[in-house]
Figure 1 (tube, one colour):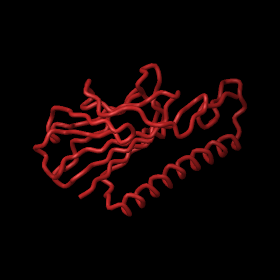
Figure 2 (figure 1 turned 45 degrees about the horizontal axis):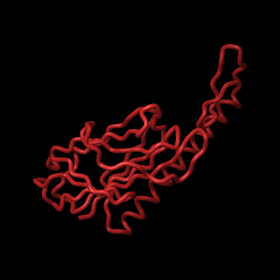
Figure 3 (figure 1 turned 135 degrees about the vertical axis):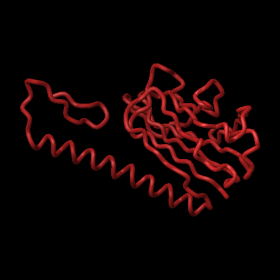
Figure 4 (figure 1 turned 90 degrees about the vertical axis):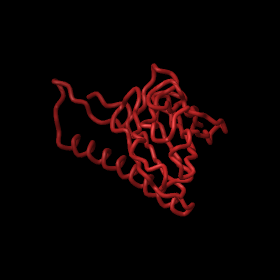
Length: 186
């Protein structure tokens, strides 16, 4: 019987014998993986609160994809002095990840250090800090806290509708379970 590459879930073929134990085993693996993600999100939210940050939103990429658009147009920039975008990316290979403004050519940071790598996947953390200073009329600038680089978008914060997350090498994909957390400092 074939199995998926990330969680070794069963993939039946016509000639395979289907058994209840296989379904139960797959469900246990899925439950364990989802619990680990939930625990990580809970730990991050508690750590943010301890640092005076407030969770604005969080999301998890549900399936493997080339890129993922993070909506930013629902953020009230006048409420925040600083906004942090933290991505815990799981990629198919040890490639870097980046965030592009409104899905375009202006990049707000790239890179991310390896946390954990296997031949099948790599984990990267990318931390971007935006500086709205409670004034949405300001032009969106960001600092990549992984590399210390500053970026300017040339647009005001209300015009920042999304950030597109992608691998720097377009032959690789973002994997399911990649987490994005956006928090703010008042």
